[in-house]
Length: 381
Image 1 (cartoon, rainbow, N blue to C red):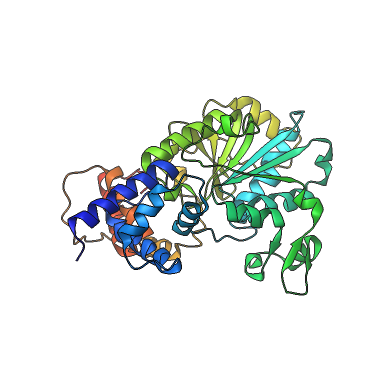
Image 2 (cartoon, one colour):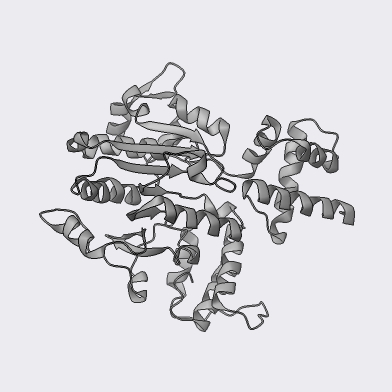
């Protein structure tokens, strides 16, 4: 049994972590934080006293290695090359060529929360393969992450086979050299195209920390914001909007479409994928720039109306059971065993997201269905 003192200390520590690093564990996930602490205590040979470990962690400065290692243990840094490739294709083969036609001096792309570097390197390889004619316009790719160990691995450009589970063999052979220890070493020319640096999205005024992060054309922040508290997400999204050019784009994971972005971004459907475009963009100028004499596939290039949202082909690589369940029950009313008070559809969607993150997919689906009964055109539901 957990004493009140232990519980109070855990909650206080949770709030401190959320304040410093943005990583948030709501009350229903406190047990998960407890498990992380126990695992970390075992790794560093603590005597089993969680209070002792928390006390030591709270004594650390934000950049102390011991605290950094603990923060790194709270998130899943696992990724791979060409993850959600449809989005990368849109950026490389649609947006970048369209920007190039505007006679810009440079194009700036930021991978925020780059983990071990597979995302920015994927962009660099795709640009080299598909856009060799853009050599006259420098495309700068900046990559940042909170995790120092991940950044060091990214800078090394050395990867194991699991990072290539979506990589075509021709690409692997063209850009990597297989070493005697079965690791793969990225070609130096691709490594030179990426500028890595540390950044805490939760605390930083991005422009003050890294002056490269201004007047950006594209920001990618995929599978990152799901770890943060709501107030932190709102702050980050606002800064993203401020750092983008008027015609700038924000790419998140196809499983992360959320109401947090609506005050600052329009949703644009390109092919079967969606991406966010900064509100107030010069739409007429964009249309002429993208379509005039172009083979680009911007059809349509207008903010999605509600009916169009349902036509987006979401590639739920981690949540396929939800997609199948939605299809199977699209014409049925899902009965909920949860007694629900009179709350809004957005409240229900937030509950569904929390349950889905915990793997409770049936309950999450039930909340989504309830939300749609309250508001049939709720985009998030």
